[in-house]
Amino acid sequence: MNERLDHMSAPRGGNSGESSAALFAISVAAELAGMHAQTLRTYDRLGLVTPHRTSGGGRRYSQRDVELLREVQRLSQEEGVNLAGIKRIIELTNQVEALQSRVGELLDEVARLRQRRGELVPLPRSNALVVWKRRTQ
Image 1 (tube, one colour):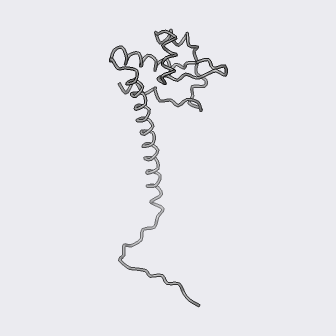
Image 2 (cartoon, helix red, strand yellow):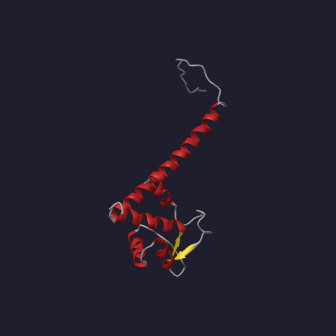
Image 3 (tube, helix red, strand yellow):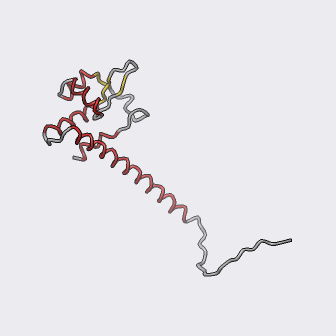
């Protein structure tokens, strides 16, 4: 199921590459997803699929949104998952993907620090104690 959910986590807004992709009006997206436009409105209201908005407030669905709509429908009809469960699945999938991204960032940081370790001068281990005392003049 995770392969099918990989497309659920694209952040809205920003430069996710979707801005140049085709956006569909609600009627077209509903037809592409094989469901009624009112279902799309309900999913939007429930936070399952959040389409882009025009300046006038109209919904515009990306191809990614249409794929998500199909997956929501599959989970509901074939797997018997209720809408609250589907919403939780989406949230957890997004959370896992965000954590995987963070792990990747941390691994990059570890690799960078390991490269810099070669720049450090090793000091011999010692049990010596250095006491610092301010000089009085």
